[in-house]
Image (tube, rainbow, N blue to C red; front, side, top):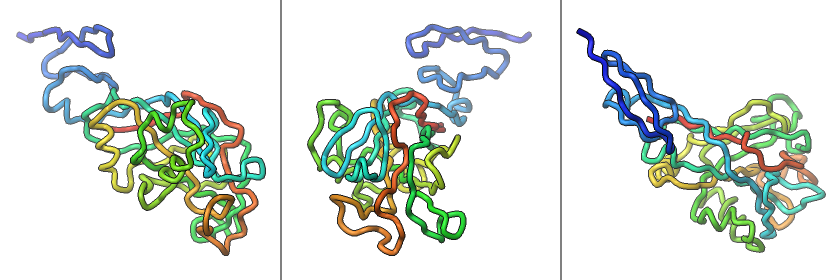
Length: 249
């Protein structure tokens, strides 16, 4: 005789009932508190976590809330690095499998760097977008609207040696429809540590190739024909459509 039993599940403050038939019971892809068996617990689940804030810091120490332009332009000649804040509590303590960030693009961009080894065609401009973890800074230091006039924030965020990219991508334009930027390729133990802790964490996005603009020393590519403007994501504002797409066990 087949036995059936009900399991009571609490999920994000909501009470649910799951009907277990024989040995199988499907699990919701984002169930944080569900009690499952060992075989189910080992299964990979993919979460889409919406951003809770965005903004940028520039090399002069100015903080802008909402807008996530990166690079530099005639309007914003100081180099900018953007941040995206996510709440990792739904995956706290889980094991990282993969991660990427979906960032809505903008038609306001000007890419002036051409680097044939990486750009898709001869003399076709392209922009290298790097995704980095939060680093040594606290979340509050980065996202608090009252946090400003501190160029150490940008230096910490933009230092590729102290805060290495988790991943990157080269894009031909600032729209890049549907592109999710890799966030787990290099030294992803840093991201795993954040998952272990849970809570609110920031990912940085930055121009990691052309850095010869105001308040920066030496360009990454002195021979490249860029420099006057090289930016993407101009005229943007915070949107919850920014998503961390993360798979965990």
